[in-house]
Length: 113
Length: 113
Image (cartoon, rainbow over all chains, first blue to last red; front, side, top):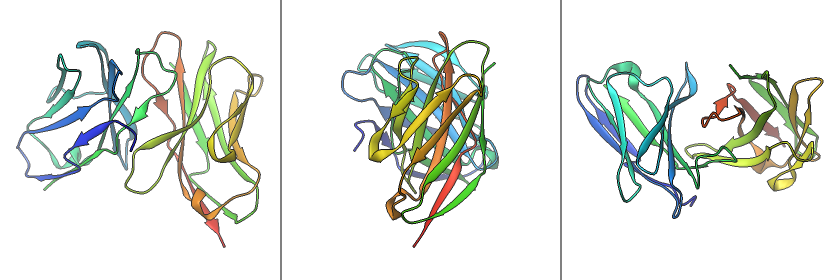
């Protein structure tokens, strides 16, 4: 157990739907990062939050959004889902937003049918 | 922008043989470099990291990597492969004040009995 908790582990939904992925960072970690892992794109950085504030955006679609709450958990919202959004979505955390190594969660596998 | 190239998407070694996984980076400034391992249906686990201290970095499970600026390389090695090392390995780079990691495309390591 890495200490980063992601729920749900698996999600199957239909095209056009909206889903919410949840991440609880390791105790004491203020930074949360979201990554998407797919066969064709590999591991892609989506977005970074630090202590509730958005710090950086990567290849995140406009249909996707995220937020980090006061208790530091984070949610990634994916809407108007398409088949191509099927992927593993990882959350990672570290204490202070510097890249001296993240701790990754075990991911949420999203399947869009 | 920084980038990472992992040479060889699949590497096979015999149990007990040397493991060598290649990673070359592109960066105009000194980078931070990382190796992560991903076992099936799991998240990414940090093996080791280079953050401008010693150029030879030792990680978990007897893995090590050497930062070679002249060759822009950060190859991962292990003297003797074990069956449990079979997994996918990712090299990643981060530069300067950037918060996110840029990952290579991964190398699938197979260990043959």
